[in-house]
Image 1: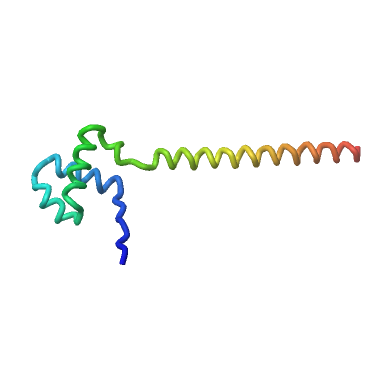
Image 2: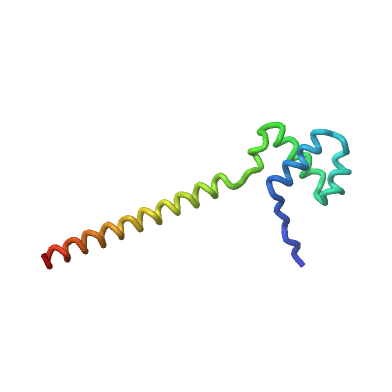
Length: 96
């Protein structure tokens, strides 16, 4: 049976890394408390120390792609509405 990989949220990783930095508990104790491998905690701690809290945020790229897709959809809709408006103006001019 294949075990599915867990994906931890950015907030969770940040909290665990901060707890590791505070050194109130050992990495092994934190690992057992949060049910993660000690190597992951060490990795998250080093990333936090190097780059800060934004290192764990994954949404930036996804949000930007979603925004670009939404803008493209809106521009497409504007184009359709402009075409309809021009067509209606043309047809209305025939009845005047």
